[in-house]
Amino acid sequence: MDDAAPPLRPDDLRAAVDWAITSRRSVRAFLPTPVAREEIEALLAVASRAPSGTNMQPWKVHVVTGEPKARLAEEIGRAFDDPEALKAHVEEYDYYPREWFPPYLDRRRAVGLALYALLGIQKGDAPRMHAQFGRNYRFFDAPVGLFFTMDRRLGQGSFLDCGAFIQGVMVAARGRGLDTCPQAAFTQFHRLVRARLGFPESDLLLCGMSLGHADPAAPENRLRTSREPVGAFTTFHG
Ligand SMILES: Cc1cc2nc3c(=O)[nH]c(=O)nc-3n(C[C@H](O)[C@H](O)[C@H](O)COP(=O)(O)O)c2cc1C
Image (cartoon, rainbow, N blue to C red):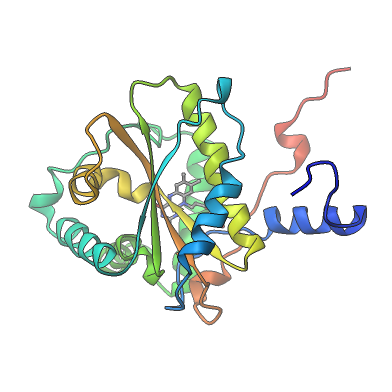
């Protein structure tokens, strides 16, 4: 595509780009409709235009479908459901803070409560909360699972670059009528993911992602999360 010539008139261009970004949301129930490999390759190629410090392009991707996805889901699911086995699985990097504090704690609680309310899960219903969380490991029934890794010897800046790439994957998916859910839930089971997918110890598992077609009838997909207004997180100088 010619960089100099946007494919749409200015108003349509703005609407399309903004729609692709703002219509992205974390989808937690997918239809079995498959996604063609060419489609996955195309959106990864688009996302790979993400910037990175000195063009290092630190991201690596593992795509799982079919049997390998089912086997991995089954294996992680078994560990997740077994309190003893679970103790052996710890995150290899802190995606979340070790100690929660406001306002982040409140936002975290709000999204959890909103999701459980849509699903009719009462506060304190540990078995149903566990089961719902466990759906992460079945990729919320999506036909495609993605895992993002990077070489752990790289600096903190590479996390930024990978984040930009991952956002690109999710936005490019919207342009193709697809939905996603980025998933830190997999980081706890990095040893199982690494062993199954055969990537080296030197590669850090950043997160997983479900990819596919959203199930429009699923109550959890009615979740609409809030955002702070621009003035709450922006300071204009001058
Ligand atoms: C890196 C990353 C990891 C996430 N991990 C999970 C996860 O493991 N399971 C899940 O259900 N949602 C996960 N989320 C989704 C967030 O809960 C979600 O982005 C947030 O609540 C805002 O909602 P939205 O994505 O629908 O706008 C993750 C999001 C990001 C960016």
